[in-house]
Figure 1 (cartoon, rainbow, N blue to C red):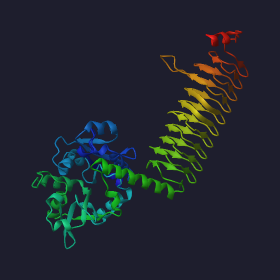
Figure 2 (figure 1 turned 135 degrees about the vertical axis):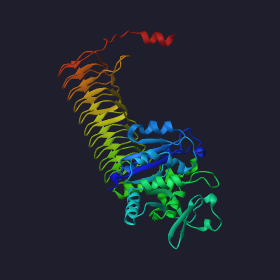
Figure 3 (figure 1 turned 90 degrees about the horizontal axis):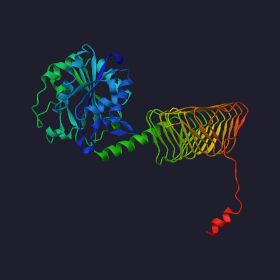
Figure 4 (figure 1 turned 45 degrees about the horizontal axis):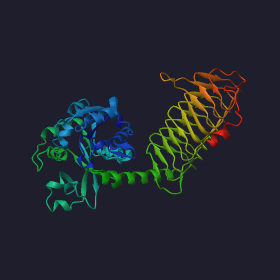
Length: 457
């Protein structure tokens, strides 16, 4: 039902108190800009037509979202009503439907709230419905003034009388409105207030005075209204979000012994009976299977991790890890790597843009880059794939059941066949046939008495 609707997200504020060169809406909560949280909530309701109103630092927001949304520029910051006016052409294209208006710095607004508010809006036959919260300390919020239960107006904090400041029902900056009545209401807003700005909060009053049915919808969880105007508040938002995400995974069957230093993305899915240990950071779109042990001090970003995986003090970026694999400590899995099932990636191992077959062991002090490695391969300590010739990257191919001796250098492009061996200390520059042993090192020469003379000197 909401797929026929559209959304306008206001993100023109500079956020001067954040002391950032970027607009306020791009301030990050759990590594994700606040405005992205809002866009995700809107899209979770199947609303795809989204217009973001930009102003200060517009290029940052436009670079971030690219062509995935539409934009309207608020060239002068003359108030929130003026910001929505900037999106008038977008709203006109959706005549006959409903428009969701949101602020881009409210990261915790949920799908349930958006949908619940929309259902109430339609059932009551409203042309405008505003989201409200009953707050013990509503300082800074516009107060919702009603007469015998009927909406009359919103009064901004700075314009409130002492009596009006006692009202606890407050506007929290989200609206559903009929597109055509929204445009009508915007045309009637005037800047007759303390700031000489066009307040969006005047819109419901204008429509109510014109005989439209206007009402408020009380939010179920006041925490959804949280925002940040400075770095201290942003810090508190991050702490709150981190706690919420830990509670989410706990309720899904994940274990957390001690939450110290644990950060879990809201876009992460973690399977039951997985244990997350202290110092673990899970960023972006991450999927982790069941029965894993992640941490301590692990970092996983935009990756897929199978069942029964152990990741100890290691980092994984944009990669895929198969079931039963052990990684770390101090391993580094770089983008576009695919690690098979029951693989061992040990200490001080780096894997880059490579495929590692099942049951392969890369135990320590090894670099594998731009390589295709088969199953049940053993890498000795200190192996290096020499994949870059100064101009181009080249691939190394290693077959199944191969044995790569300690301190082997594989100079790509090169292929080691199935079941082939390389002797310790070998530099491989030519293909090694299946089942062969490659020895590529200079013959040892012993010089008798040389050391004794050196010591005397």
